[in-house]
Length: 173
Image 1 (cartoon, rainbow, N blue to C red):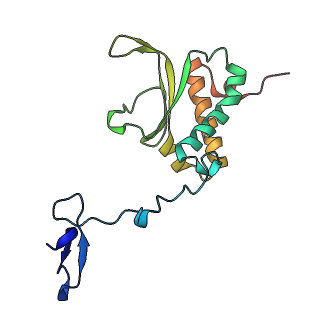
Image 2: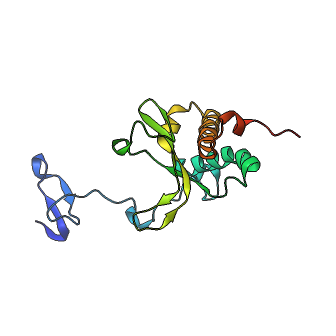
Image 3: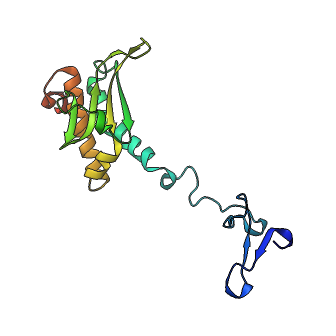
């Protein structure tokens, strides 16, 4: 090996060079911080809506879809949590399980009743929405909001033990 950690003779004709890095004797690509100029700046400022991740945008749509339901049924839903998970655990899913809203074999949401966890602590009832299956079935942002509203209406109706039409109806003035 030549001086300075540069290996020569790697290519035909003996003209090639490669840097050696953290791996013993191996080639590693150069980092983005070439020539000491530092890393590139973010594409969007942190506060800009375009800088939010898909999960953060999905959470915002969930809150927007849940708002009219909470406005009307807030007192009855105080002991209910809403959670978002990326994907369901299909292997552990029971196909005859009540409280599941699905599209074929893939669940879109699940109502988990209140109970006791493995450590013996009491748990609150919760609706778990599965982000990736819901996003895959929506055509655009407006369709996703409508789909989320429908799924939340079905899950809240299951939790309260009423028909979904009761949850979705506008109150009489």
